Image (cartoon, rainbow, N blue to C red; front, side, top):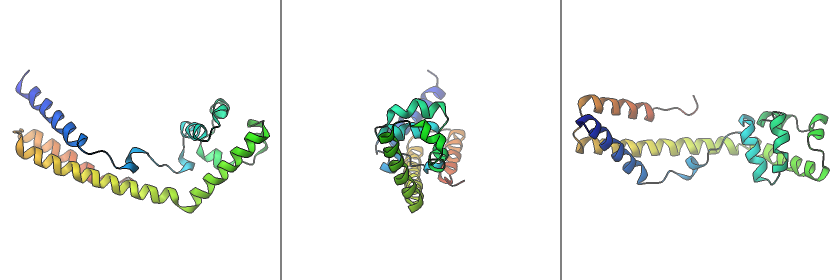
Length: 160
């Protein structure tokens, strides 16, 4: 193994040790996306969480995403999509709850917390990497690349 390969390996090990030393904040472990932005897979996961997994094949074949779920709930076509009344009533209650949460700003607040946690995690990573750069003999090129990557990460704008 050459000197470049061993320093790359040392960098990887140091980064993994640095990042792995502290778990991610809870809000980063579970992404929180506004329901209108949900893809079909998000809707299917939501159905599973609410014990309506039997509806998944129908939702997938009809392309029901978050926007359709929240905006077309009263359509006669949608009533045909869920033929069993008890299940349809349950689905409508769950969708209404989802609408209420979306309207209350719960998702916007969670996204703000998530962005704050992300920034804190990146600052922690930056501090760890700065300490690492001082202790390991990196080439100037490697230090420059690491510095640029960290700067870009610290200026990441989740709203953009």
